[in-house]
Image (tube, rainbow, N blue to C red; front, side, top):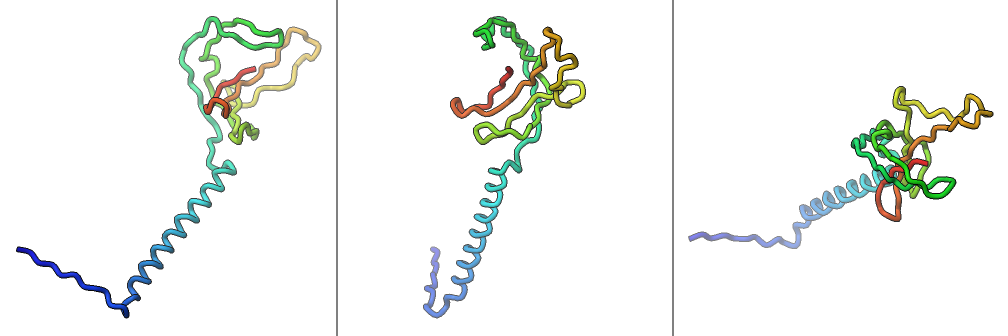
Length: 144
């Protein structure tokens, strides 16, 4: 047979309960301030990845439909050609960073100047991009 007794708090002893309420409110305010601080910095882009390394599989899409200046074309698309490092270029799309492809052998930007501007057969190499698309709610790979 067990017996327990509970004491009732007396009206004059509110010092302990005030202390516990004060500690609780202090903890709550510190946690909320920390959450606000991190959320604001995150919205400003402070905690985003500066670079991404992409490794696509060795798949080949033989009848990829590509939009070009002449309309739609059917081409062969090898995903592994786009393996490499993608770096933030400072641009934003849908309030998210845009990652731009870098050269494979040294990690520098693609050269945007033509060695011979009169050469009609020279095609400037356009880097691929990885950016967020709000309409489908996903990160997408793009190459123009």
